[in-house]
Length: 261
Image (cartoon, rainbow, N blue to C red; front, side, top):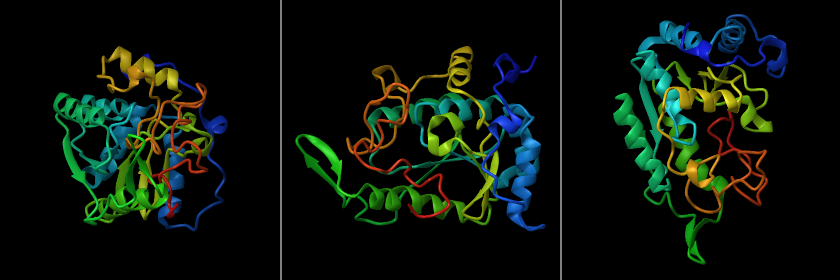
């Protein structure tokens, strides 16, 4: 029995099909992504990861924010012995607990970690202290400087053809049609756990005794940057991302979008 098959499999195929983008022009990167997405649909996460590495080798990277469920992807990479560079964006606003979690998982899984951050010397210009808390006056602009622009730089490297993320459909309504493979910023974005429900994630992390993010025990279900304008405990227990950018229409920082938010 493979490690994946210890996890109950969720619905696949038509039930989880991404929004129809229409058939892409033959020979384009989008057409290739759509073909791979169809091939990946019936596979386990292990099989998707192995196939991705077999296809792209050193030109495949992994990305992580060392958030609450980061151990899912990073443990798979370690367990499957995938020799990948792992890119982490140092926004300069991470919780100290997130940085400690980064160190824990990097050491435990011997990750080839590459840290990237903004080249702008005034990257914290939207941050200010208010009532004893750090707040961001313009979260969209701050994310553009400290996340989206940084990601665009390393995805733009000539030695990167595809990248892995831990994105899942059940994380939010905006992610509910996440394909296994699609195109973002001119590169193939691979989401091997797109169809995993939260219960399966939790079961996997427990079975393999993956270290837990220190803030998870405090009730944080989605962990981004530390300012109170960016991350708080969830307001809705049924929506794990309801603690992100509370009071704003914003639902994504932009890292999972193919345009500037």
